[in-house]
Length: 84
Length: 248
Image 1 (cartoon, rainbow over the protein chains, first blue to last red):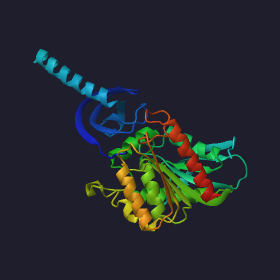
Image 2 (cartoon, rainbow over the protein chains, first blue to last red):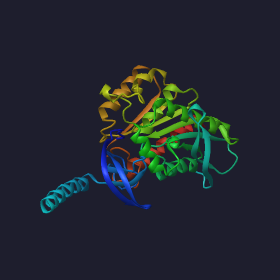
Image 3 (cartoon, one colour):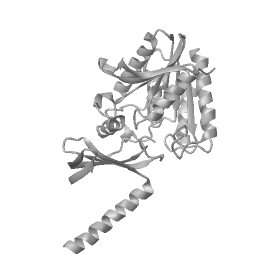
Image 4 (cartoon, rainbow over the protein chains, first blue to last red):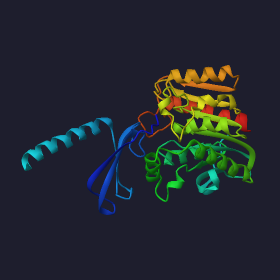
């Protein structure tokens, strides 16, 4: 399928890409045909700069995207426990 | 007949509102005359596969052009422009139809053209092919490869960019239509393909639909898990036969 559904989230942080480090201000998340990954559908995340330039793009299988979500949550939980 | 030699390059074309954009143009070597085909890329954009498919048409004796539907978001790489197009809600139907008309005009203006022009599209491009065949004059043959959202079951899917379900324009379809679909596809589902076929049949339109068992969406794409070599080979054969029948 081709879907136009895109989840947009404001974020605060930095990302490192081919041009080095830069600020990122939003993330676009969607599940659709990838551009590059050898998958029929991929969970794609675009990290955008404050002026809406795409700085980092990832295309993940659904399974690995779910694993990543679990890792993020686990890291946050244990890290916040450790650091208060 | 296949043509071993071809010329392929980036060209400019005049699209919707007279905007000038890039397109990939591949034609058989020689003076022709050759039929022309506009190839509409899928939503991920003006990618390697759409250029390979354009060259495949040229290999089979067709002068083919693949307009970059996201050029207005540039400059940038095709994948970045596709991301920008998506983030802005996708290109509008009016703009796509205008760009297809511009690409058709490009084809007819070439010295090697025989004057006949077809359109083919994949996925969202399949939908846009059907839409163009309903809205534009001068399309001599149209091929819809698994175009989703031609049948719109949920009106909430209609947006300012895509305000009409293409099936509702079926009465205006003038070109013969070839449709290729996978029976494991969810968009379009087999039921939606049936709905479209019933509509075309009731209107007395010229169409030829093929439904493939064991295939889902995008089964031509050799670099994806959904590739189905047997069905894809048969499908491409049907595409070439159809175009040569209607475009000469």
